[in-house]
Image (cartoon, rainbow, N blue to C red; front, side, top):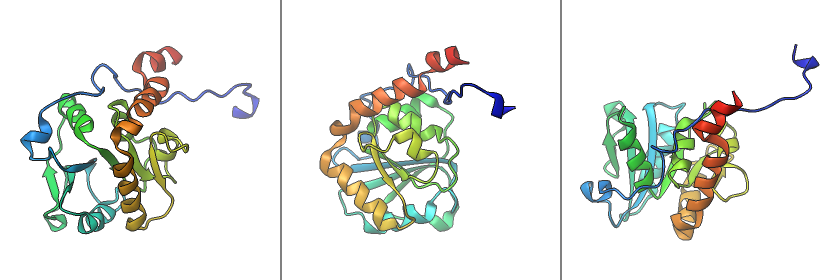
Length: 194
């Protein structure tokens, strides 16, 4: 059937850009993160396929003015004092506030087929550090304007990428991220394509 097709069109999963957009909330102050470089990680359930091992190793490398915010179900054995743990939330407004508050979104998942959390982070103007051998590479793009892709499974590569984002600052990436989300994941455009 596909061999007879004359045209192939990619239609991405959509993001509601009216919800997921850059915001100025108070969530950083609530969690004492105002002066901290904040690394956000979100998954429904954290395990090795989602990259919890990478995150735990990074938590040992970061200095005192950096924090990881991890949202999702997590076994007690994975706890670390440089990670703020939050249970899974179904409140999209709260997620959008976290994406906006973070300096960077970290997605070390080995199993992303789309990675809606990555697209949501971009929609909120937040750059991404992620595993480039999954769909994350396609979502973020390989030009470096929306974040940094890591090709290996070495936590030090992720850490170095985080430091590069920190050095350039979120403002360097913010408009590129938001524009990429508008161009690729806008709900209205995607539904129209369907």
